[in-house]
Picture 1 (spheres, one colour):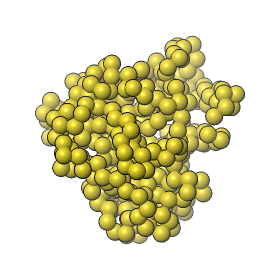
Picture 2 (cartoon, rainbow, N blue to C red):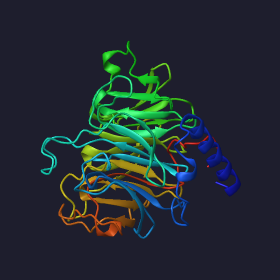
Picture 3 (cartoon, rainbow, N blue to C red):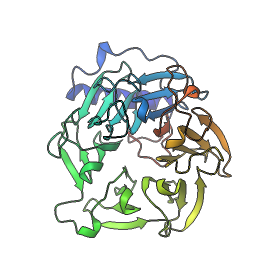
Picture 4 (cartoon, rainbow, N blue to C red):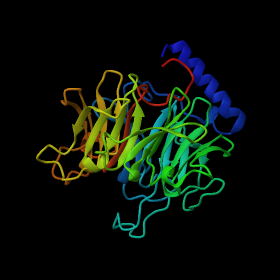
Length: 360
């Protein structure tokens, strides 16, 4: 994005929030450092380290929100699943930790929040409440992903409620799928992501129905993607510039690209290394502008960037060790991650919904 256009967009974005949230931005925000929010940096939702971090290409950590693997309070984001940069702010999804997952919190942690956080780590907008679960106004049940729309609405994948909702900044639900009269066959089963397409439709990763679906604003399914019926657990779906769909096939430890007719065009497996665990369950795959694919290889505790030829050209996290490579460090991602669920390159919205209605 040209600097003049970028400045104009960020100014309009700040002005929009300023009208709705007069105490959110302004004088208390910290000045942007030369390295913060630099295009090409990586943003990682480091799930069981209860944080979102920004790092440069070498893995040096520049910013993080959350206090680490031993903090399960409202000051962190326990079990964080998703993050994306919106201007200089960060949209973060606090998913919580299920009972029996972490021995430190055997009963789990309830964190049902979607938050917009500024560089100074202040929450400037939020939908949902820490410690509370529901489906009514300002309540969620295990949100797993959120997309900031060019309208400044937020598309939230509310997994525990088996729905996708669109909310405005006044926390009003303005659209949702499914609707009240949706046929049983078209209902969702543990959805894991939702993206707004250029044609106005919504692409949903309907995880436990083993499919991605494209639905209209009138809630009609117009296309279904299953990689020829081979996927098991669609954790993420996005539409690429060529019209193909990139699926994160978590149950098969695979990323698979299909064409408009659901034919397999390209695929990559994350469990082929001898030091991989048996089922690493990758949770996100994002196609980048240069053609590489950024993969959150969840239980291999790493994020990798692979070429079209399947060559790994960048790694974040400790080397593979059959699952025994969990780590936490505030200086570098190369000293450890813990089940990273999501990763994106700042400034690169290839295949994703751009948060602003401008040319990226």
